[in-house]
Amino acid sequence: MDYGNIRGTVRLSLAGPIQTLADVLERAHMDDSVSQSRRLIAQGAVTVNGVRQTDPWATLSVPGTYEIHVGKSHHATVILEEPS
Image: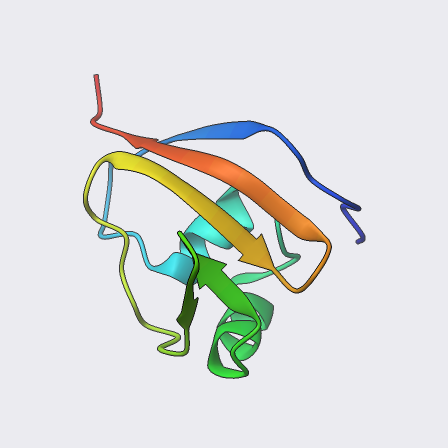
C-alpha cells in the first residue's frame, strides 16, 4: 500500500509494550509492515529529528514529538503520549 506524501501530525499512545521505531512507523501508517520498516531502518532510509537511524530494534519510549522521515517523500510529525 502506498500512503503517499504524509504531512501532518499523528498521535500515538505509549500504552502497551515498548515501542520500537519500526512499530511506530507501522502504527503511524508510514509503512506497510513492521518487517518492511525494519528493512528500511537497517538500510538507513529513516531519520528521526534529523538523525539517520540504522538500528532496526531502536525504541521510542520517551513521550515527545518526533519528526520522522522515511525516504525522500514520506514524513510526519509523530507525538508519543503517555497513556491516559
